[in-house]
Image 1 (cartoon, one colour):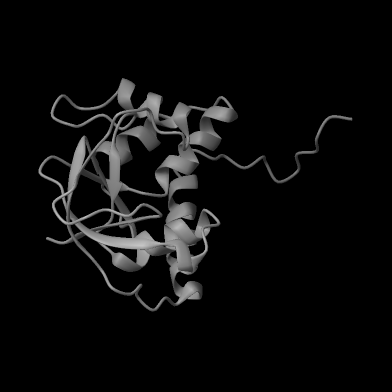
Image 2 (cartoon, rainbow, N blue to C red):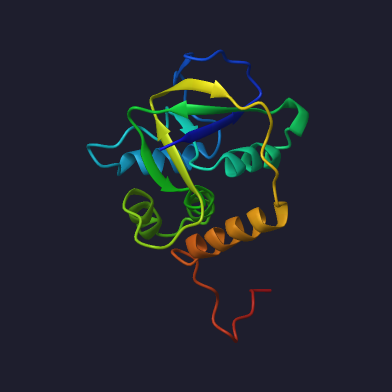
Length: 170
């Protein structure tokens, strides 16, 4: 299977990228996931990421406010990796902020049962196979629609709306 990684870095073919520091995106969520990770799973806190989709890898970096002209897209291989639903991490961060029960999100992350559009692959390292010469054409509306669907599914695993007649305290 082909995996893709988008970055602003220039890497030659065969370059090995090794995770050497904690992730800065949603660190509390990563630590909560690692606290309940299966024995055979790599760390989510210290890892590198890839996607099965060149389009999603590119879309993710665009959503981080990286201009398209700065993005380099690579086909990579990961010998040790885990596949998990991408949108759960943001939902888990929100759930933890609100001090809600996160167990269903964490269980779904490590053992997905629902249908998800976008997955992240993560592991301790990846090797660059090749640089793609051009970025894929993106339908931003469709990619956002897919991600928003995943975000809604993830939110449904923890969020409980207030009762219909509930009014906030004055």
